[in-house]
Length: 88
Image (cartoon, rainbow, N blue to C red; front, side, top):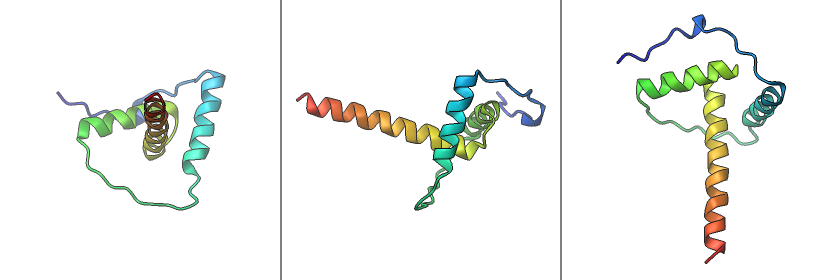
């Protein structure tokens, strides 16, 4: 199954005001780099295409989207791990 898309043909999407504000805040935060570290990894074409599609719909570069999602997930995982260990 070919998942390739031409993202230039996707329509612009209007986000609700609250979501748009959250996306802009997250983008600013993800773009702030006090100390930059390069991270490289390989992904399959389908995964990259999906991330690019979602990032386009959010109106942000896909690299920024990846940073936002990974950071948010790491905070969530850390919170869950902390709660689990404090309940021992």
